[in-house]
Image (cartoon, rainbow, N blue to C red):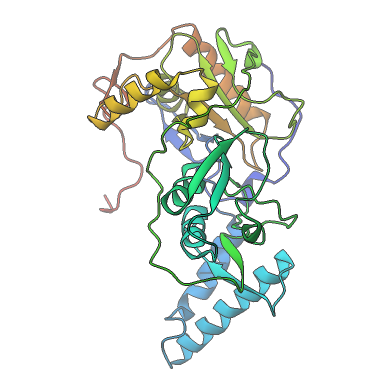
Length: 362
């Protein structure tokens, strides 16, 4: 596949770590290709520079009486104002609550939303676990069709956990732009017990799977590759491609891309096990069988996919590297024997990872 003249919307040098040299299995150093942006995005240099500029003044917020504490408090409250202005929130009615990420924001909302405890939450099998488990913990949930774009309750619609480059959070239609990981919270907020973040937990398959199809597209002509999910006509700008290659474990595909081609992707079920099981046409009995295996500590052979997810800086050169690696995987051209560990990850046998960075300073 030849490189395309299409360029990324953001210059690569505007972000930190882009094209960082990383080691390959054969000893070469190559520019790293990050196609796992749905999980981790690199920082903008402007953000890093702003943090570095402020760090000498950093101190406790709303606690100390010293100059640095006063400056930090002013900066913190100004940040609330800027986010509120960006979201178009009403300063008389809304308050911005900062959270570490969307998972924590949704947990806070689910624990504090002022609705009756016997309310019913309408959700879908599409949800990330962080937008599923917190609601299950407090309410009875009903899984509807994947196409239902409804807020869980009428009161939930004004709440908008938001982030800059990826948005696997709530499906509450707010019509607002998205910024930092925050929640724009209205005055119906009701303090409850401390949140219990649910990231890393696993939701059970829905009791009533919805109808839906799987499309089979050979991405870039890779033999045996199937892209799963909606058709390209339903959302032509979505920068996420989940796929499988017939007969090859998703974990092995991801490992070979990483170790032999310097390409970072994600494999597994992406904290959306019910929907992945649906796309893979895995029945409930089959799904519960591997769930039981995982409970016993063995994730080898668990069903899943490989996910490529693009950032604002990726270009066709990155795609070329990934597709070249996938073609070699599909052809069985591996540079080493790989072993599957009980956590489901694959590693080349006998390979010693060279460390380009160490906290020990060596």
